[in-house]
Length: 369
Image (cartoon, rainbow, N blue to C red; front, side, top):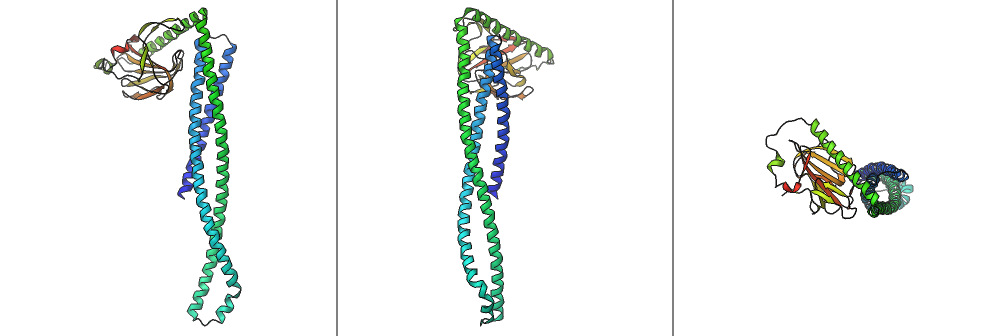
């Protein structure tokens, strides 16, 4: 019974995960079609890269989900193997026992009445023998039906196991295809950026796009600040812990606060924060308690999380591979809010981190420990 409950739970999990996979694949196909449409249109480099990055992130997520589903299916196959082995052993013993019973009945049943009539046994002994024989017949019936039930269960489990093995083979092919697509998507992004690096007109266009993205982000923060109820906390966590805030992730700074000339694209922009180079998928932590006021894609910043720390203070985390918070969440300092990625990044896996005061950028290095 315990094995049956485990199997039912595993099947429920498999169905639920498969539905999630189907929805993710449908979204991925939509984004890939949008990328093809953009290739036919004259769109800016940033917009094109942003959409490719969205496809890359979804592909990585889809591959991760495929791995999770594969692990679940392998677990299911293992459970079925255990159950099949148990049923085989049980039926082997039952079959041997039933064969012995059938031979005994075959020898006994046609003559048992005559044997009883001419027996020298007492009446209680005769009744006892007759009663035992009746019980034995019922036991034989019960044993037969139990064997039949186990056999049907064995055939069903064996069919399920074989279906899952075929599913796993298909899952492996699907994963290989998606890994190839991921490589193609990354190559496509690199080709676009390499072309920008070679052509002055594309460099200038990219510079304008980057500045436009910065202005839109500033407009967003100003808009959020206007909507925020002006209540002073008296003692602000960010200000009180100036110079002692924990880092948003581990890594090394590759771009400091202030004016920046990109070494590859020769674009001149003002970096309103710092860029931290680290490993793809590393944890990103909130530097202070606050409320998530934005958690979505943003042109030029990829997956972006913006946290309001009150009194006009905001922290910003860009280029995330994954966002683990939602708009409206109240969070504590040190909470994991996302994973390092390359969405919207021109320099591979990186975390873009900013601190703002009253909508204006301040150098994060003055606040971090």
